[in-house]
Length: 310
Length: 281
Image (tube, rainbow over all chains, first blue to last red; front, top):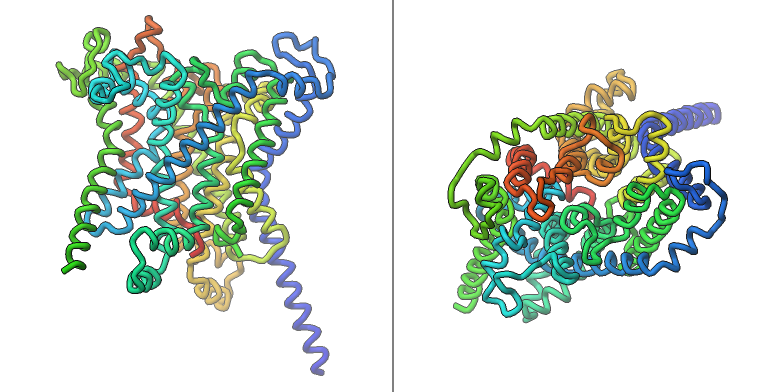
């Protein structure tokens, strides 16, 4: 009797589990399809097209050329210059944002008044359109109509007629300022979330043991927010690596300020070089994968765990 | 004594930090606002001072008479709203399953979402351009809505599944004990409880679609589907070395107004949404 009861419970449980499994898969299916339709399928398409000489203006000239597009790209100094620009922008902006963002997070964590006001003002750069930020900063740095030259002319390297978009480094500087302004709030909010996870008791205990502010920061606070720092760096680094809007608006790639994304865009949309452009797309995708892997390895944190997924 | 001095120092430091954050965040916004009140004569002659010499609302009159800008504004609103609604519906279903149900492939779905969140959008521009022309989706609203859904789903799924884990599930079980099916329990009990999370995901999705630029300039060709960021990059006056500062600043102010309204009303929710699931908790 007990054997039959057990058997029937077991079948009920597994029926339930099976139904749950089916329902779960059905519920995620639409989202998975939408995500794949616009990413996986075009990526396969890009892999395929990258093996062809294919220009939309001369579609009949399409010809299978195997890896010659990749050879063309990888031996072109333009590709390497743009990759260098992109990596430079990524490293500098993320490093600066990490410092400013952490300072912001500290202030927001300690502050006891006007929390709503500070939250509102920090969310404005986050929510603002990147193109608008690019225009705002382009005009701020403008030779005729910008306030930057007038306000900062006391600095030895800024004159009232400094042309920020006239040479490489000042133009890169302006682009990075816009990028940093727009995305620091995101960094600050992620770091703030990490900061609020650090136990106050532990900091207090370190204080009692005579640790200085600097020691508390490096030995207690930062190690305990490693997961939050990694998530912030990972997301921001990969986002900075796709930088496009700021460059498009502020310089259109003039003064050698082009990024990898901009180069890909120019090949595909302006020159209609679908074959060569697809090779660039594939390379860009692989670089992003490599970067993500490197960052995750660097911090030695299980990403799913860091995001709260067991 | 020393402790009190330290406290006072922290307090002063916090105040300075507060002011610095406010200046940092708002200065460019005030700048663009000030620029929008400078007349075309003033910017053409060159006007490096921060505030206008002569305040004028001519730019606002001009921009609201500009049919291209109004079309772009309509496209932006329509495309962002539709992408938001669809994306949030799909994400809600998926996040419920992820937070609540045991099924095969859960980790795979989460990894896929994460991978797509980091995807370099521009590498899709070529193949999508080609595909959309074949399917007749080039330069149409659905041509932008579909990719916007794909790119906002990851964020929406992560945010929502984090919210859903906080929901008291006993209530669902109670409903099931009372004879409701899983589906009824989901619809009648969980949806109302989950509404704040869904709302937050909707705001973040809307911000993305409102902001998006790469696809907007690549997959459109006329004002019938071009959104505001794309349209703004085409605002070039007669003189390429002297862009229409006032017009661009005014357009910027107009498209920033909805963002500021949303931020003012829902700042607490947005912060919760952005940071939920970012750390263990």
